[in-house]
Image (cartoon, rainbow, N blue to C red):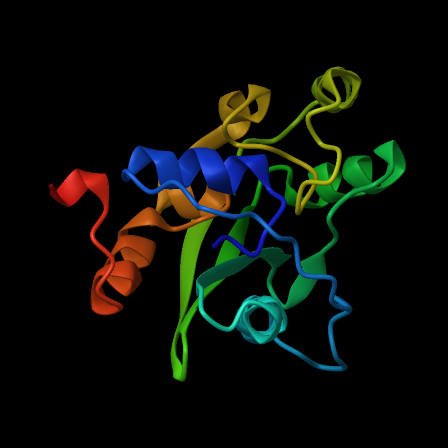
Length: 189
């Protein structure tokens, strides 16, 4: 079971031969705590999502994830307005940022929790590039205001780490967690 309403995560899981039998979004407060560092937030939210759904679905293998984009210790929002996305893109323009994904897997009494961090370098963006990107609508609901799997791919000059992590689910680590829990994906058949 996938504790996420993200269609990107469903697509990513399909790449490693995993099809969730059920998708159920967890309804939790995602507000960062005072002085909470980005990687700790990603882990805490993934764990809270997994535990919330596992409490309702006690017989299910539950996978949850959360992705946090940060410039230094500054956590960027999942953008809901064009102005918020504009601010995020302007902040990341010409500099690096980090994408942290917490991944939690619960199987009965057992729980596995990981955090994966990727470094991303964005080119310096002209005002016109930002406005054109905002016009695409791809930024809506995205952590940091961009989707690397879309038009923003043309803004990224360097990645150090996992590409799938930046999209929203680190596949290598997720596959390893599923294997540790005894789940065999179609990829392994």
